[in-house]
Length: 468
Image 1 (cartoon, rainbow, N blue to C red):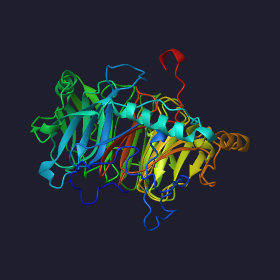
Image 2: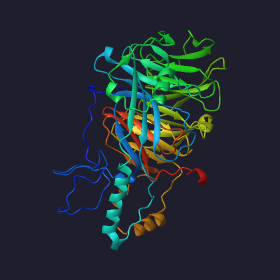
Image 3: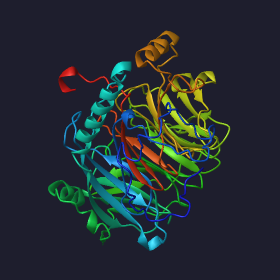
Image 4: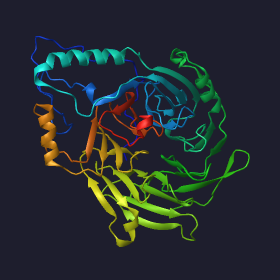
């Protein structure tokens, strides 16, 4: 149930060394090695270095106070975007040191640079110097496009924002869960329009916070909460869950208001941690709880509790319903494990089709890729963001061929799961991640020290050749 940020401090920009800086030609380079948190230890004088060649794009930024939750906003810039530079719109909620300092941040990050890299670098033993020069020039070419431009607008929010979600069909309508115990719905269309019309860097005015009344405010929950989700099928339909194990169903009405059921859905015996609507059924949603269970609900039924799944041996923190393979539900636990449930097998008693214990600290976020049915992103309190392809199996012949092509020892741990595609590190106290539904391969993450936007170079997405 790891949720809060410890001692939130306002983020400050750090002058990070550019790619290639900080090295000395007089020091012999050692073979690169994958470092595993919780397994490997840094010796005196050792430091971790990011391998920039592992990313098509990687950028870090912050918007002020840390954000426990955010959402990526759908935009009108193109359904499938593959060419750099990119632009991204997001909404986030702050976790400020004082309650009165909190806000909802609506921001646009534009001119996101990057370049597509080969999955297997072209290495030749005799031309190492030339390759090094070429690599440097490539890095310079990429860096020459400049730092991304951040445009930010803020709306005052009473109390910390525990979770925030944008409506799928109308991304300018967002719902926020506050630590005051209220769920509020906001219209941020004017802020999105202002960001879209501006091309200048407004980040210097980021301290200005506007006052705006919410469209709707619900105070019927018995406690604060974290679980909230908009229906991807019925515009305006919402569910919210609190720390007193109650779930409320919101039905939209005319005039930008909602009827929130006075009677709550009670099936869990402890705090409701996350909620997910079915991607294929209008009346079905899933919930997970500190009681270690996942419940499938169907609001059409007299008894809406359709199924109870004992999912983990500890608190179930987060769930994600696969939109491309709707029988698959992913869940992440406080014990660091995450599992995949095949909902077609629930009646048989054992619906777990995959279980991973790679992470050793609580799972804080899980989300299926919107472009690949077998690909999943996971974040953990061990400061790792991992990406998995559940369709993969170990192929020793392919591994041997790869080592031969690289013409060097591949210093990767031999005990890593074959489904593990990518490990991203460098953020502290990771809290939430989201894929960008319109930019294949892009992941955005938030942590105590700010946001990262990353595009791993080994995440391949089936995109028609004429748009690649």
